[in-house]
Length: 434
Image (cartoon, rainbow, N blue to C red):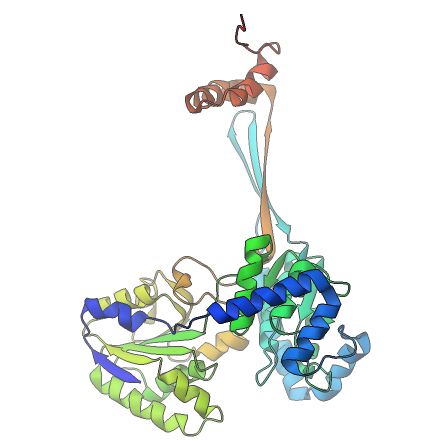
């Protein structure tokens, strides 16, 4: 984890660069998987799972009995934690319920806008060494609050054919019962195209490895919406001389342990703090169970020192981090100047892990600089909006000259005729064909 002091602006793009990888080979594999599942359905899923994972569960769908039995394998302590997190997530997202809009733009012209739930949504939850049951809470709770009629969950199972019990318990807390033991790109394909067992959905949510990400990107080009562009997870910490090095180091490492392609960046205005954090990161890394993953992530990470806060803010906005922690004196004065970030954590006692699990905000956030133009998942992500307009005859008359003049100027005669036929005795000027 290298330290850079007052780097010139010409060097900023290099310091802001994310981990890049050539996904051409992955794209070819994923496209083949998508094609096979689209054509072969359940049989293709079973074949792919056997080839990739070495096994396939006898029954793809999780039974009601398996969901109910999950409580036995989840400690009372974890159950309380999941329920507490669910309450906070539910409360924050419930407050995002949109209000219908109705405006009479002029006499006799009424315009409306209202939110409609996306009818069928699919959620992908990774399994493996870190089954993300917290992500299930982040996705299923707003989907339920939005009123989505059908919520489909795909998640890989172990070689014993069982889904992680914490994932099943979280699903039970959220009221999700259509759960399928399918992972990888084939899970995305199953939800995008539908199979004999898995329902086709209209929008797919959830993180995953490069195969899952590539599959989501591919199906989004064929009529299935996805939550957002996604890449490896990332954090930026802004800190000053008042910050405690141990706090900052923990925040950097909590991101680095996500995966070897994660990225953690410290931006500060104090060289002493920079060196203290560097040493603290090294010391804390030695004690982490996922040390090998952390060390690889730290190769992609860096510490950048600037003399003034203005430059720190400019650099942070240019990077557009997924997570941004502001551990500085008067952090809100800095936060108010941030225009590009997925989620911001204010002050020394707001670690990223609070948002990852239980504060109530959503942890499904844009990465790779997309935070400059994309928002994280919220209640809106599970809704779409329809606008309405209702004009009385008087309203259309008052607006007719505007419509006809604009239609004529654009050379769209039929547009103008749609007004004239309603107002002027059904008479439309026709060309003399003689």
